[in-house]
Image (tube, rainbow, N blue to C red; front, side, top):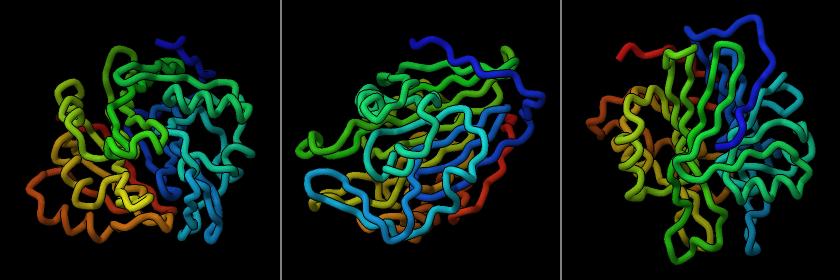
Length: 280
């Protein structure tokens, strides 16, 4: 395990309510228990293009809800993987080079080359502790698979993330971020080791590169929700780039046909979901 990230004390640590603010693609701002966490930062404008490697590009179709200068003070970044549509040139240029970034080893290597100094690399099931006063956050790397085996070498490795928030010795909230994963057998291990997930941020979109689907379609995203069974779920990563082939309507339809009792919340760019701790 990496050394603990210790953050300066703040006056308030609100454990009663948290917020997920949807900026666009997989970029969200999570505020809970005194922590402010940015995920997968991409801030290109609508109409601009991002390079995805191997001669492929994607056009941004939707303007992000804000820019980096609008975010205020950040505590850390949780990054599923280092790819142009998850950590873009704007992020590389404008983010504080000393901000802690929790991600995988491949991404830390890429970030170091871009001048970032505080990358924390996790292998699957490894954890990173973050502490602020009486509040603590444990980020654990979850299994992810970005592409079928025959093209896996063309894409960077990806991880999901489990965020467990504590107040002293008391567990307060559990939030799961799928990352850019396909359905795969190791997803079944997640609820065995991490039951009672309060909220999941689910990457969908059916991203298609070189004729191959490399992120979950709407129907597959609902199947992932059925597997991990969170209390609530927010679909993200569904319409921002031209390589997405399965939009939010596909997921809504699949959710309506599913028997899972998860409550889905559908956000558009610039909207927030406010959550509370479950008593289950």
